[in-house]
Image (cartoon, rainbow, N blue to C red; front, side, top):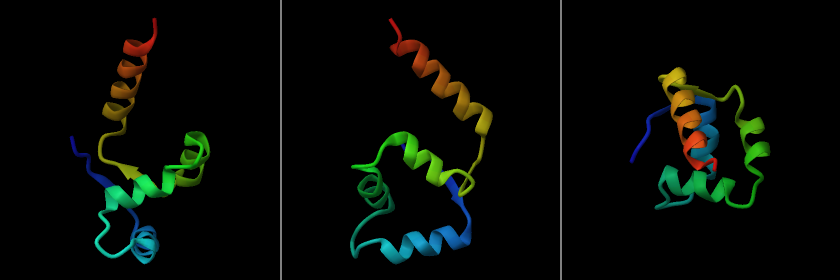
Length: 70
């Protein structure tokens, strides 16, 4: 499954500057969040990422949360 994420040009340039040769952006994101607390990572990303359909994304998150609860 793939998702489209829109980021500002300045954020893209910062990510591009730390991306390793031959590394995909998915691999870069995985590397950056691998050891980080999910909550802290989201706080750092707040305001840097724009979502195409925020309401749809929130609905999917809530549905998955409901599925995982006993």
